[in-house]
Image (cartoon, rainbow, N blue to C red; front, side):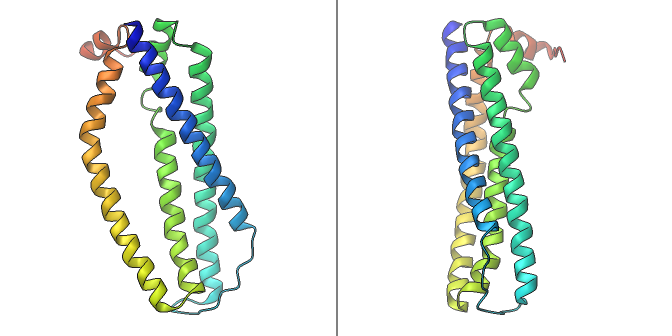
Length: 183
C-alpha cells in the first residue's frame, strides 16, 4: 500500500507542477499579446474594429482561464505537499474528497488553449492574405480532429489507469465499493 500512496503522490504532484507551469507560461504569453497593439492589414469579411474586439475577447477569456488553471494547480500541488505521501490516511481522504476537482486544472488549461486557438484565427485572417488564412483553417481542422481522436482514445485507457491508481490508496477501494463519501 505504501507504494500505491507514494506512486499516486508523485503522479499528482508532477501533474500539477506541469499544468501550473504550462498554464502560467500561456497566461504570460497571452498577457503580452493583449498589451501589444495590432495593425490589421486586411478587412476580409470582418471589419478591423470587429476583428480587434473579437480577438481581444478570446484572448481575455483565454488569459483568465489560464490564470485560474495556474492558481488551482498550484493550490492542489501545495495541499499535496503539505499532506505528503507518508500520511496515507489523510492523503487518501484528500483524494477521495477532492477527486472531482483534481482534473480541473488540466481541463481549464485545455480550454484556454482552445480559446486562444480560435482567437488566433481572427488574428491570422486580419494580418495575412487569404491563402495563409485558408492554410491555417485546414491545419486547425486537421489538428482539432487529431486531438479529438486522441482524447477519445485516451479516455478509456487513462480512465482505467486513474481508477487503478486511486484503488491502490488505503480505504479508497472499500469506500468506492460501498459508494461512501465523507463530504
